[in-house]
Image 1: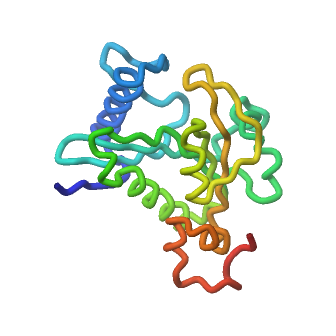
Image 2 (image 1 turned 45 degrees about the vertical axis):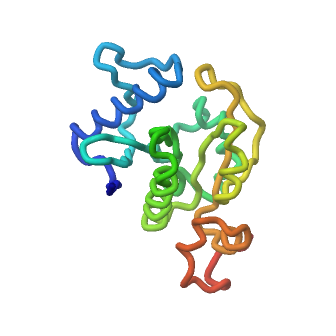
Image 3 (image 1 turned 180 degrees about the horizontal axis):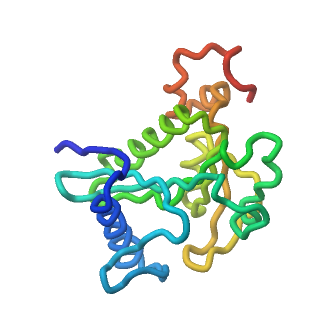
Length: 200
C-alpha cells in the first residue's frame, strides 16, 4: 500500500477533496455545515484556499486546508475570534496562515496520514517563510497539538457547527522551542544552530 501526498492543482482534485469532506463531516460525523447536498460536496466559501490531499490509488483518504492570513480582513469575525490584533507586532497577514479541516479516513489513521499531511504543511510554511500558523481544535485534541508545538493563547469559543473550539498558534521559526518539547517538527531544524533560531 503506497499513499501519495500533494497539493491540489486541478479542478478534479479539488472536487475529490470536497466530496471526501462531505463524506466525513456530513455523512459520518453528522455536522450541519452549509454545503452542496445534491452533489455531496463540502466546499469553501470566499477565497480559494490551498488544499492538500492524501490519496490511496484513486481514493482520497485525508486532506488539510490552508488559508492565507492576508485574506483575513481586519476586525472581521475571524480576526476577532483568533485575536489577531495581538500578533501584529510579530507577523502581519502575509506572514501567517490558518490550518483548517485536517481530516483522515478512520480506516487509515494507523498509517500516519494526518502527521504526513502536517509535515507537508510545515515544509510549505518554512519554504514560504511563514512565521505563525493558527488553528482551532476540539478539546480532546488539545494535548496532541501541544505536543507538536502549538500553544493556547485565548479563551475557547463555541462554533455553531463543531461546538467548543480552542484557538492555538505555532511559531513556525522557533526551532529552540520545538526542539525543547521534542516536537516532530524539530527534524526540520536538524542543521540549524541555536544562535540561528528564534528564542523560546
